[in-house]
Amino acid sequence: MSDHMRQILESKRAMRQQLAALPFAEKVKLLEQLRDRTLAIATSPLKRQMTHPG
Amino acid sequence: MKATLEVINQMQADGVIGNYAIGGAVGATFYLEPVATLDIDVFVSLQGGDASPLLSLTPIYDYLTTRGHKTEKEYIIIAAWPVQFLPPGNPLVEEALAQALETDLEGVRTRVMTAEHLTAIALQTGRAKDFARILQFIESGTLDVDKLDGILQRHGLVAKWEQFGDKFKDNL
Image (cartoon, rainbow over all chains, first blue to last red; front, side, top):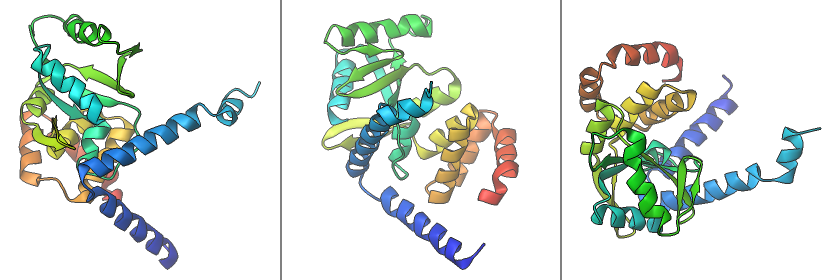
């Protein structure tokens, strides 16, 4: 594994730890944002076009 | 989610359900970084436990639908969150429900399964996303190894845990 890739993975791990350490209430707010984003993607016309090309 | 929990707490106060505990991805978020999920898994102990799970969930659905909450497939939408109510289907989940941690979300009390029980349930369920969650728990360092070991032994999951370790040792 290259040094650059190692740095990226380490940075991701640090970010995950930082997020995990947040208070539950703040993590729930992030969950709600993630849920809204997921729903927006799922109902996007672009996604429907890709899923049902015909 | 605060409003969702208030409704569930009221349902408990009204005697429709007994103890409850949040599991699944939302439960895991208590310990780990948030991951995208569309629903909340709420494990409930039910009044009149002899009935079949489907029949015993009926009072929950009746209670909530008469108060204007809509159903959508196996979910009930409570304050914008699809909630799935799950009766404990086996001794592991019963134990997880009994030993859940009491906490609060912005002043609303609730209960969340322990990290060790969530890990054991994920192992027992055994889908790809469950294995990913176990890896997250291991990486986070939040697991009490002795406590997890006891759970795995009590519920016959030691061999499965070893298989998991063999399969994912490069990720640990």
